[in-house]
Length: 343
Image 1 (tube, helix red, strand yellow):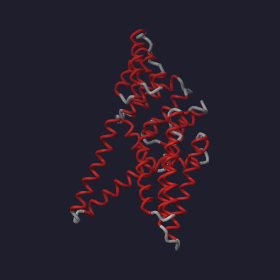
Image 2 (cartoon, one colour; image 1 turned 60 degrees about the vertical axis):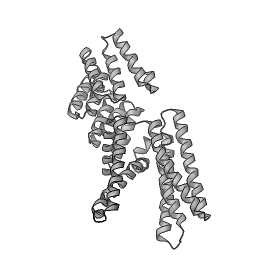
Image 3 (tube, helix red, strand yellow; image 1 turned 30 degrees about the horizontal axis):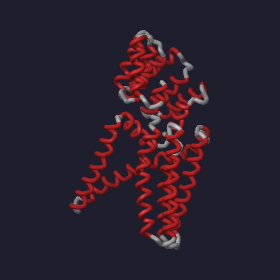
Image 4 (tube, helix red, strand yellow; image 1 turned 45 degrees about the vertical axis):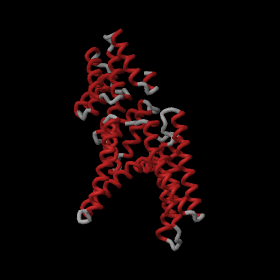
């Protein structure tokens, strides 16, 4: 498990397989193997390992939970819930099982039921981070749009990295093809432009749902207690930048002040919400320092761009804005690499 926590899953799998060879009658070892298989997205392998462990120890709670998680990922939700029900029969006050059931309910679109099981897990173990993270998502999932976003995130997370890249690149290439057809065929443009707008809206939503939803959680009467101190700092900064953006954009559109610097500043403030929302999400202190440093660098670009545009150097300001957006795009991938997925 030490190797697993160091993100060295292949080595960890090899070690636990050696342990199984040396002591093949311990069901818990199969559960650990299943957990590692889940981490590498080998869901069928995880299911087989958990089943093997249950063959040796039918009441092993850890193996039952691993089996349930694998079944959810394999889109066999009812079988997963039956498995967790069996686990709860053996240990009705097992906080991990309740949290696991909560995540299973959440992944299958039952946010209210998920919240109840996360609450029970936290009653049994108040500082249980796995349940805290689930409760935060369940609260945010009360919003219809966030529920759809969460469904997309769960679906993407089931895919291996190669298929995730294939999907993203395929969607982008599809956008380029449709855009090219629309430009070369004006008669088709009224029918194709809505597809392009839908793609842009989808792409932007995947960027902005997280910061906006974390701000919503910070303002929630119960949700704010689930946030860690650094997450609260992020939420406050996101809220402050959202207010700044609304003020600047409001000045641009609804006042007599005619200066594009206000619109420039407002758009930049909205863009900066993305790194600010995840800069403390690194898996390790080093990862966190990298994300915070990157966010500071992006913030410096935005501030320099604002100063430049108000000083009248529009060409330099435009270049800085372009670098800012490129930087934020690259930051998204850095955040995924350094922060990983919590789903």
